Image (cartoon, rainbow, N blue to C red; front, side, top):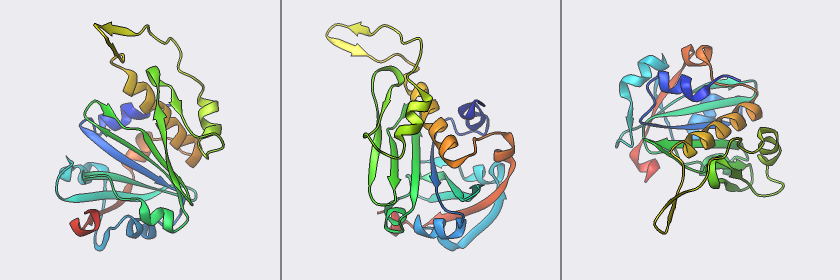
Length: 203
């Protein structure tokens, strides 16, 4: 398996990113469900879209397009993560991965009816509800190996520095296995549509 986070880092996304994988082959409809202004569309590659890269800025932009057969990907270029309520209301399954600097958030996923979180436990262990759509892929990923000893500082227990990275790799594996495609250099080089999401949609 490729180092997907390595490719994203190489594209300049180290300060943070939100990636939303949606089970739909209609990329424009997905953009609309995420609140995009469809008239703002600019077709470009990721390098061009990254000219607008501003994590958590007040202007929200997503770079979105076909990911794999029957799947669309939306990458947040600037602003907060897109709201996924519209995806659930449309009955679409999705996964959303979010990072900010060194922080890796829990994985948000929706099965077309409800949304839930795959949560992080000690050193890269990811837990999801029994019977959830991500559970089979978590079993396939297996538990992390070479688990380090707990770091004690007085009465505190500190996670190892690479805890978030291990969880992130698991999340990216889940997205790749569920959608049928992993992020690689070819994925990064493709053209997709860059949209602006009006602030009123986000608030």
